[in-house]
Amino acid sequence: MKKRMMFAAAFASGLALVVVANSAQAQMAKSGSFEGVFPWSSYGETTESVNDSSYWHGGFNGGFVHSDGSGFLHEAGITCPAAGGTVGGRQFFQGSCTVTDADGDQAMLIWNCEMQADGVCPGPQSWVAGTGKYEGISGEMTFEGRFIGNTPQGISYWKGEWNLP
Image 1 (tube, rainbow, N blue to C red):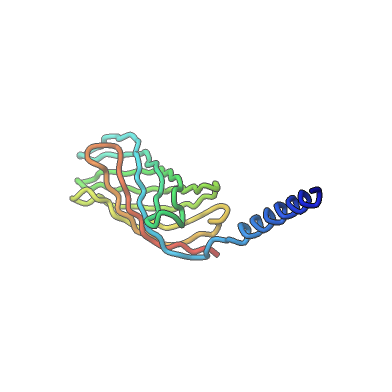
Image 2: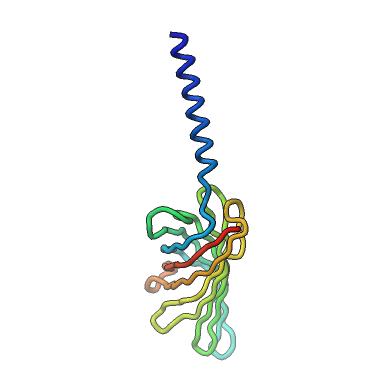
């Protein structure tokens, strides 16, 4: 009986070591493409200016859902401080986003867009910095963001590529 218990303990310890070793070896790919959706809620303040122009500062917060239901940044939290303005009837927005995954590692991107007549704000995004597994991240993306009706909520569709050193 004592030998069985020692064997079981040794087996369990060995299994634990194998699991730890395999998870350490399971590294993230060095590059890839992805797409998904970023549902968000916005906040901010608008200041009226001259000649029907205005300035807005605030942000967008939400989470990312990868189109495959798993993978790169799936279920990551996103915080995006931003600014925008209306000049001559045209609306412009720009900002940055910090994307934080379940492990606490972060990737940062910058973006900008001009609101179209149909209420869609399409534009480019670029990965510019990261921590942990995202350190040295780079890559280009596109997005299309829009408000949902007359609410502070909206949705953005992301598609792009990422590279790691």
